[in-house]
Every structure is written in C-alpha cells, then in structure tokens.
Length: 388
Image 1 (cartoon, rainbow, N blue to C red):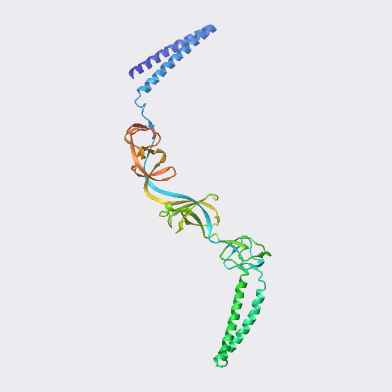
Image 2: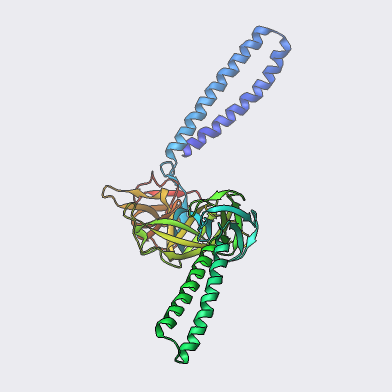
C-alpha cells in the first residue's frame, strides 16, 4: 500500500511539472502560427494522456485487489417484532333479503284495480290490487239470506226444544241447516278475500308487473314485487375445511366494489349441512342498511377473520429459502460490529400467510436481525456488510 501511495505522489508531481511546460510551450507554439508544429504538439499531449489513464487504471485495480472489503457482500436487514396477526379468508358473496317477494294471485280473473305504483311504501295488510270476483259477492248475499232464515228457524226450534215441545229430529235438522248455511257463507267469503291482493309485509313497491285490465292466472301471473331493505344479509359458501374456525359471531370485513364502500359486520348464522357437490357450507353475514344504498343481488367481497394470534412474528416470504431437506431457513445476523456481522442460517417453521407476509411459528425470536436484500447470495457463517 505504501508503494502505491509513493507512485501516486510521484505521478502527480510529474503531471504538474509537465502541465507548466505544456502551458508555456503551447503559448509559444500557438504564436508560431505553424500548423505542422501545432499538430505535432497536440499528438504528443494525446499520447501522454493515454499513458496517464492507463497508469491510473492499474492503480485502481491494485487498490481493489488489496481492499479488505472487496469480497464482503452488501446486505440490508429488518428487525423482527411481535405483533397481532389476523388471518382472513377471502370470499365472494351476494346480497340477499328474505323480504323480496313477487306477488301472484290466488284466484283467476280480470285485474280490475291497482292501487299502488313503483316506489310507494306499503304496510303489512295494505290493499294493493283487486281482481274481479266473478259474481261471488252476489252469491254471498244470496247465501247470507238463506243463512239468516236458517238462523231464525233454528232459534225458534231451539226455544221449542227447551220447552220440551217438538221432536229432537226437528231441532237437529234446524241446527244442521243453520250451521251448513253459515259454513257456506264463510267459504265464499274466504274465496272472495282472495280477490283482494294485500301486502305480505311492510316494504316498498319495486315493480308493478301486470297492468290493470289484464286477465291473470292463479299462482302464475306475476303482479307486484315488494322489497324490504331493512333486513339485508350476504350469503356465501365456505369450504368445509374451515368448519371449526368459521363460526357464529366471527368478524367479517365486507367490501362493495360497485359502491366503493367497506363496512364491518359478523357472521349471524352458519349452515349445518355440507353440500356434497362442492364440499361447502353456507354462512349468512348481517348487513346494516340504514341509508338503503345496498340492494339485493349486489356483489360483495368478504374477508372473514378465521385465525388470530396476539404476538406473532411476521416476515416477508421473499427472504425464505429451502435446503435439500425441504426445510425453510433465513439468515440471522450475529456478532455484529458497526456495519459488519456474520450471517447465521436458521431453520424456521412457518404458518399462515397474509399478502406478502408469512407467520413464523418457530425458529425466530423478537428483535432478531434478518437479511433481506442479498439473502439469496449469502452463505452460512459468511461475513456481511450492512448498508441499511
């Protein structure tokens, strides 16, 4: 190293002296106005420049060869820390409601009246539409007259029977005739009630499907859709392998991509049946919908917390290598002095992953310093230089 420094000093002195000569001689040469002389001097200077550059290159190579850090790899590090780790199962589901009904008539006929329109709020039992009863009202009126007469006859026969007047058979016949008439009237009234279409629950009229004046068929013609957006939920299928970890009350993060909205919820019900076709079970997640922006059949992305650990060590998956025995390992620094340390290969056991991080179950402790950049090129017990 001392010889190299002497060479550098001597070269600097020679170069300085030659620069002075060059500056004086160049002035004289330029003053001559002789092109040949000027060109000759230029060629000399170019040759000297090439020689000096070659010497500097040799010195640089020698410095690199003698440098004590030339074979030490440069690395970056991270320090492990214990933190809460929540693993999430990511699924997709759709919004549903148990109060989303298309009403169909219970009797055939002409739709004579429609009392609501799209967007109307209705309450349970409210009259929505009416079907022509086909003369049932007149039949009921006629039967009611007969029932009234049967009642009068039965009342008189009953008084006579109580006074021990008349035969028992007359009393029983009057009673039977009256009860039969009442039953006939009640049956027709029940039939007539089917001509009135009423709301099965409180909600909003989403669509009036059949217009007034159309002929409708019992149980087939769709009349009106009513939706209640208060009791919404998301239903999704969960693989059977999660049957012990996905249970009622589990925390769920719900995201609606179309709405750009994310909310917190929980599982309100898990299914008790494994579908043999795809080996899954159903879960329901309650969805609060105070402003009624969430609609049935809306797509939702779900993140269900299936595993939590209070103090877990998480490391990047990219720094993990595998040996010939299929064991996973990382490099931990030891014997650190300033920016140098020794790389120590440590076998680890890993658990669940989340994004680009993985949980370390064994092999590492809190505050261990791990090699990140340069981990693939380091060897066990090799000295490294930290450039954090």
